[in-house]
Length: 304
Image (cartoon, rainbow, N blue to C red; front, side):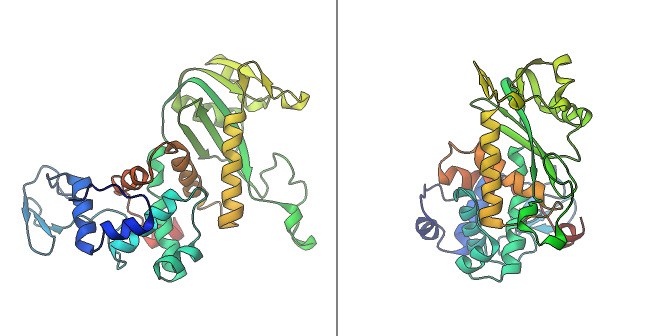
C-alpha cells in the first residue's frame, strides 16, 4: 500500500518503481482491503496467485484492472500512471504525439490511452450548482479564416452551427462548473440543461433569447453585451467566459483540432482540471485513479 505524496514525474517513478507497486496502490484506492467482485458485489471472493481473485457466485476470475480503463490493455501500469499524471497535472493537457514520446508508445496507442482517460473525467461534470450561477454558451471549431477559399463555409459566423459545435456551460461563483456539448442553443435545450443542475440560485446570463424561460424558474439577471454592458454590480458572466478561453486555448494550442464525435471528452478534461484547481498534483492523480471504472473499447471509441 502506497500513501506517499509525490510532486513530480520523477517522484512518481520513484514511488511506483515496479508494476506490483502500481497494483498495490490501485487495490488500496479501489477496494481498501475489502475486495469486491465486479461480477457480483454480494459474492464472497477468493484470493488467487498472480494478483488474481475468484468470484464465488459466478466462478469468474478478475483483478484490480477488470472493468476499468486499464482492462485488456498490454501497456504496463507504470506507463498508464505516467500518462494520468501528465494529463491531470499539465494545465493545458498533453497531445498524443507528445505522450507517445514521453512514455515510449506509438501515437495510436497514446491517443487511445488519452481517450480512455478522458472518458473518466466526466465524474466532475455533473455537479449541483446553487447561490450565484453564471450561464453561457460558446461554439468550438469552424474558423473560416484558417480555410482555403474552396473550403470556406458561407454564413458560418457568430452563432451559426453549420460547421461549429455548441457547448453550454454553467458555473457557481467560487464553486464548480459543468459544461455540455448540446445540439443547439434554443430556449428548450438551454432550459432543460439548466434545471438538471441548478438549484435555488441567482442566474446570470447575457441577452441571448435562449434564456428567456429561465426567468420563470429562477431569479434571473442579464448583462447586455450588445450594449457593451459587461458588469453591473454583481451581475456578470466573466467567470464562465474565462473558462471558455481556457478550453479554446487548450484545444487550439495543444490538440489543434477535435471532432464533434469526441468533443465532449475534451470538454470533460478541461472541466475536471477547472474543478480540481485547488487539489494538489497527487490529489488529482488519485482522484482519477479512484474513478477508473469507465471502460472504453476501441470499437466504442471509433464507431460510438
